[in-house]
Length: 288
Ligand SMILES: NC(=O)c1ccc[n+]([C@@H]2O[C@H](COP(=O)([O-])OP(=O)(O)OC[C@H]3O[C@@H](n4cnc5c(N)ncnc54)[C@H](OP(=O)(O)O)[C@@H]3O)[C@@H](O)[C@H]2O)c1
Image 1 (cartoon, rainbow, N blue to C red):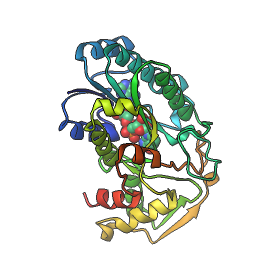
Image 2: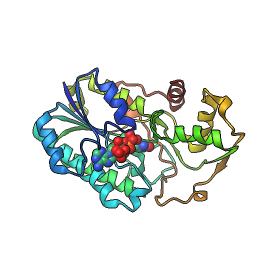
Image 3: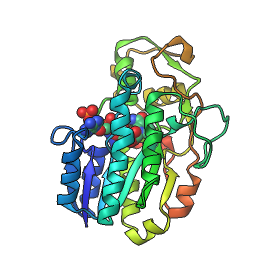
Image 4: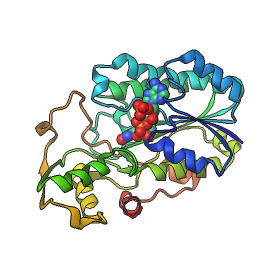
């Protein structure tokens, strides 16, 4: 099996590069060897590799910067997934793509289901929704996995930042009104490999969009407290107190949904794959 992986140097992509190797020959591409904005090059690579599976872990993920770089965000997050779908369809390849909880406005007050109304609040969210729609518009076999609050221990992430702040500050102020599912990039990569190992026929039968994230949900404050509690090098911490804040205390260019936690039960029952709770995954990640 040949797998073409885009975004191979990102949080998720770097984990996928490692995990997918056990399933087939992986051709990894990242911005250093292929800028996705060069669409002709992208098409040529897809046509020359002729992969069975295209996995798109690339994305423009700078949520605040996207507010002033909308064209770039819409190209990478909106147009390029459509191009992948178009080329995958011609090759009869399977496309795996990731999307975000930021397609929701966070006002539902309950876990979000796959067919809930999408009302993105930010350019990033709108551009990712455009990507979902561009894939669905093609006659292609695909899975779109909507995920949330992705972190990795080897790239800059909320987890690595909290660990850093805890070593510099005595008091940490963290928002308690943003709630979602913290998701370890490695879990997402492992789950993707488990999916692929089920075979393309099974995936094609269940093609579509699913929510896949750490089970359960947490506020950023709960998450930060758990990170600090599980820190294996606690003796290095200076932090004495973690105090709740509200989103309006930290104005940002992009508006974020407040409660955007995803209900992942459809994915788990369809594919018979268990998603670990966000605490289980964090414990494992922190022990690395
Ligand atoms: N991070 C989150 O909290 C989060 C939450 C929900 C959903 N997601 C989704 O999950 C997926 C994986 O996210 P992630 O956290 O792994 O993102 P990430 O760490 O930012 O990785 C994305 C990768 O795409 C690359 N990329 C961006 N623009 C490119 C371009 N023009 N050409 C080639 N490569 C380009 C980036 O390169 P550079 O690093 O050089 O820019 C980066 O290596 C994405 O679909 C994302 O939207 C993420």
